[in-house]
Image (cartoon, rainbow, N blue to C red; front, side, top):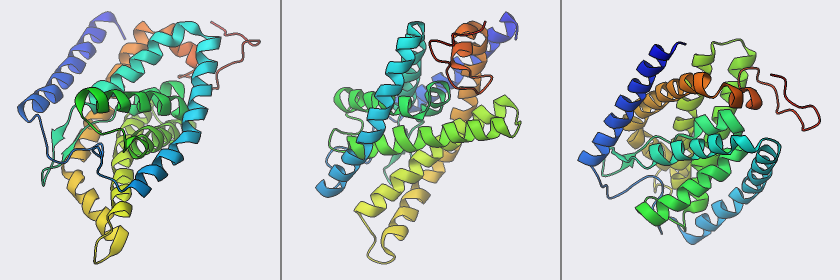
Amino acid sequence: MNRRNVKKTGLKISILLAYVLGVYIVFPDSAYAMHIMEGFLPFNWAAFWMVAMVPFVILGVRSIKKTVTLYPNLKMLLGMAGAFAFVLSAMKIPSVTGSCSHPTGVGLGAILFGPTAMTVLGMIVLIFQALLLAHGGLTTLGANTFSMAIVGPLVSFGIYKGLNKLGAPRWLSIFLAAALGDLMTYVTTSIQLGLAFPAAIGGVMASATKFMSIFAFTQVPLAISEGILTVMVFNVLSVYSQKELRLLSIFSGKELPSSKQGVKA
């Protein structure tokens, strides 16, 4: 890709981000927002999801520590992945029945650094959003982390690796990884809400299906947009961050080499 194409790609990214931000400004607040808002879950379910996220957070801390210890110059790229998730997931777009949806931005970090590293980044993003933007909450941090920063990255990472092994075009692998990781976040959230608030008729599945149908109207186009945006970001990174991507072995799909092995240019 030459520099002219990179500029065009950068312009497309700016336009897409401006569009999402514009909708957010025009329709700023919703009565019932996703992430799951502060105090919305019963105590037992809030505690359950808080405990469930802990093992993944521990694995993520170890993963990040290993990466930045071996390759300190990847810290900036790691921060960029977190910032990408923060910006996208902070943009709430109205859905139906007073709810709202938003992109998640977790696919990028999951592909770059692995799903457990993205768990830590996603949890940090959710904490800042709860404290600074009143988006989500601290009591529901476990549930929101599990859906957006555990299930979403695992799905994105698995799809990306699986499609790569099947020989799919890289742009398609990235697009589907980001889009389906986004969608599975909302499927998980719907199940969480269904478990906490089962319907009088039909129980958990009826309630979860209702929540899924509510968010499908806005989340499907959002997932597609996020997939396209993630492909664009990777195109830019492939030009300006070739060294970092080589260290992360994004193009080969191999694991990070150990410090003894070193990295071949």
